[in-house]
Length: 205
Length: 205
DNA sequence: CCTACCGATCGGTAGG
DNA sequence: CCTACCGATCGGTAGG
Image 1 (tube, helix red, strand yellow):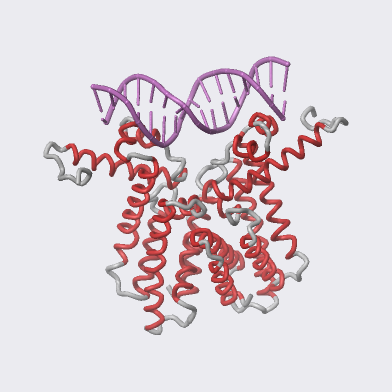
Image 2: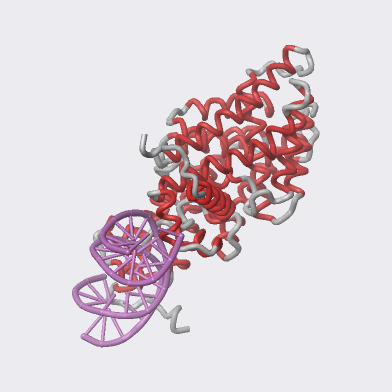
């Protein structure tokens, strides 16, 4: 009860929430470049003009900050990539919109290091714990969303490919992740175009 | 001249080389799990029963250790994945052998964290410097090797797909990298089988 | 939210 | 190759 008590009326709770939001947004941006473990309390504190212990107090432990950062990055991803596509019809229109908004999300630098998940998943894939679990959950939801559209396309007879939808969703995600990596390495958005071309060839997008 | 002087005859040079080799082999194994930046001089020193400053003296700087580790990992990759395939005929047999040995290299745990390159590339893709350059070089050579086989298959009329060979090599590599990630996250080698199935469908492998 | 501090660890170096 | 040390930084805490 104490932890979830009603907000005090003097605004301290509101100010605390605002700080937390600023911290995790900044931490997600830094983590897309440096990785999540490498983002120190000092890094985010300095960027925001607060003290290190202010950040520490707001989250308790480094791991709690990491979990809150993953949650924030996931919300940003949903807002920037998933939400715009949900207005399109299920099946091909929605899959196309998801791919378009994903490529755009990388290209326009929503996160400075490209896709947050692509940057952080390999960092945690062999480190069991709540951070990996949270990343894995986000990945599962993303792939399920793609698989649903592929399955719909197959039902509608819009896709000749009869491979299982989850397998094809694996392929879509693989091409996007590889494009993000290649773009970061080369500094050339042409990698995104390459992925687009492959997706067009494989899925009539 | 001084740095490249002939080896002394008392064996100090030989011992130094052996130490360096042990250090980078161990560092590559650790980096496949924790990432390259997170491997400290102390970590490798403790594992090998030497002192931290012994490791430091053998490499000069942390970055030199990182570069030597990338070079060692690349040699291991060539030995475990590339070399066995070079005995096969160019084109489909060789591409199939490359894919087989790659999947086997991950499955049998040549590196405890799966594919070294897949673990470390995302860590450095937005960090300009010699380490990123070395990783990028290794990636280019790997993709070129794949592209050569694909081009040969197209020349031989063994592949209907007319997309440019470098683009198809991008796809092959993307599927393998995604399989490595999925396997690490899920702890299930089934992800490797999924990639195999997709590669069979796309490239008649 | 702050200052001030804790022990642990980092990469690197001096000196042998 | 070692011991012993350096300044810097890490996550975290005491106390306000």
